[in-house]
Length: 293
Ligand code: HPA
Image (cartoon, rainbow, N blue to C red; front, side, top):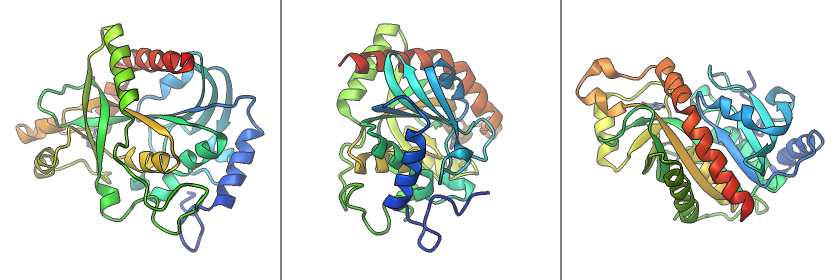
């Protein structure tokens, strides 16, 4: 299943040699030189259909890439133009809960760094915790609580490779304030409501108990999901500017009042599908502005 892929068998760490092999393969399979990376979350793969002049590279052909085992996550790397910008897009991501280490799930972000990506746009499906959030809402991520990282699964754990970044990278801020403002301006111009909030990462794959949702609300989370934070840590270590957008796929906080409201994976995928048109317009609008600047 590839659980051993990407990372050193003895240590579980991702090395420079690994990344160089990955990057050489990707370079030799695309005409483009993207400076913007995009990660698509659960149910958001259709955004990939909007990429023009596209070079498609299946994950299982790329050295050291690990395949996603989750329904709703196709495993393809797309390189092309979107909103007038040259992008490298991960159509499908791998997760910690699949059994991979956070170093393995972030290997594509490290490859983006070596390919010259300077700006990362991460998307995900998340459960809404802020009481005013509804399924189908879009939320720009202002900060995260990396519960998995805080518990010891930080993707930077292990020897620090100096060409990747510094030993103790700052995460304040992790999400670029200027990009947040840009996203809010684009959303306003499109008449789209864009929430703002803090994303908490949990390991999953089980959804949260009502007590866990209460805990997440207490510690300041507005949304909860099972991805993104490790990718953002690696992107910041790599010196990239990061923008994060969550699709609120279910109202996790509803479980506090009514246990019938607990999330299902199908519900998450369906909300993703419904939010696609607004998300596509927002992302294309943001990329158009970035391509111009
Ligand atoms: N909890 C955790 N992860 C999620 C959820 C949720 O309610 N919805 C989508 N991803």
